[in-house]
Length: 400
Image 1 (cartoon, rainbow, N blue to C red):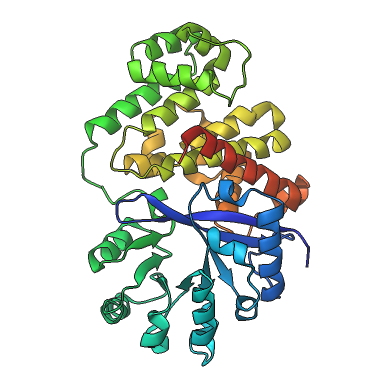
Image 2: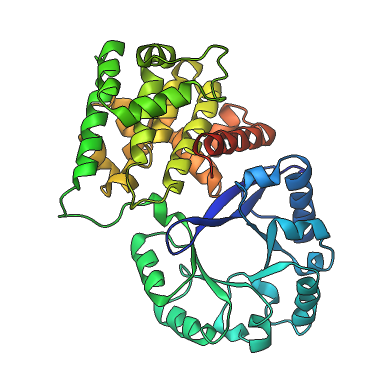
């Protein structure tokens, strides 16, 4: 097994769709799969990697982190972990006779504890009373069984986490049942809205994008567009003067800002800034869009250096279906994007499309495109560095 351990992060939301924390998802250096044959070695390597090769608090955006820990390692956790991590006990150990005593000792030392993938067959009141969170896999558990389990756990003070929530229908079901937290990529999926008219804000964003992404648009056209929108003007000036661009001279002219950033960057930032106007969508959707954009851009610089802006655009626009509550095919039909970008977004076609799919699977700790890894000689170390840099850049742009 490779010594290098790489991580992705998955947000966990509260009932108001604000981020409560992140689960750290890990893959071994070979990248073929996101599993470890030796769980103890994995846990040790992960802790070492997280605290020595990266800034864990920055990677978690100052939120709590949740980490799966093997039973053997429960007895060997260093105290410093309790400040940033919530320890998840894997489902394999929930019925063990000695687990309660082990967790009681950890609780005395100040650790916060969670039971991962909990099932009704392992229910013991003393076990539930000693942990902070209980996680239920809603993808693998039938709805009747979920309801039965929730009813049983309601008599305890424990917080309930619905994990692997992949659709808004699942989210609504779990919300109505009274879950406290929600984990999964439902926030990146559109709600079922077929036959429903788009809200005015979404129509306006589509109109803006349709204009911004015209192939014949000029810098002066974009300048006039930006100038008419006070919020967009202000935020673009903030952006161009931020540490992100590290310019020696202050820029106080919208025209200068537009000229400095260029058409492709202005398109991207205008898109991102306008995403912020959707109050009913979690801010994490913007963070996901920007992280994908930066990661795709980094990959694009290796795969097709002369088209890296295209890769950035594909990553940034990849959440438009969730933002608009339409299918991606419907969204791209409304926009004057190039055929390559349309195919990349709606079909994962072409090199940008394969790269986008790769970036999404990387973030979800799922198996990757072996051909892409092999053909472009992408190493585990490079991918880890690029992904972590993308997280940091997105967090730096958006804040907490």
